[in-house]
Image 1: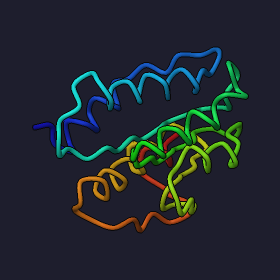
Image 2: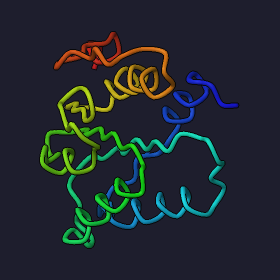
Image 3: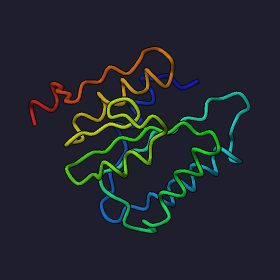
Image 4: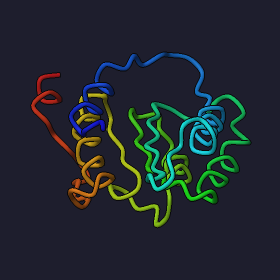
Length: 144
C-alpha cells in the first residue's frame, strides 16, 4: 500500500512538460484506469488533476469528459498551478460542491504544490478535513 509520503515524493519527482495541455486525453486515460486497467473492487475512485494552464487540445470535449468521469462515480479534485489557470476549468474538473480550497485549489507557482497536495491527500485518505487557506506560504516559496 502506498502511503501519503510516498505519493508526495513521486509527485515531487514528476517532470512538468511544456507545450500543449491535453486535459481531454488525460481524463480519457483516467477513466480507462478506473474502468479496466487495474481498478480494485471496493477501492475509492478518487482523482487529483494537476494543471498549469488551460486545455488547448480538444478543449471543447474536456467539459463533457470531466462530467462523464464524475457520472461514473470518480471523485475529482483539481489543482491549478500558475497565473494562467482558468478558474472555470478548475471548477468543472472538480466534483461538487466545487468550492475553492475544498474541491479545487490554486497556486501561483509549483513551490506550493506539495503543501496543497499534502493537505488534499489527508482528505482523500481520510486523515483530515480540508482547511487550506486561500493563500499558502511555505518555506520553499518564501525562498523563491
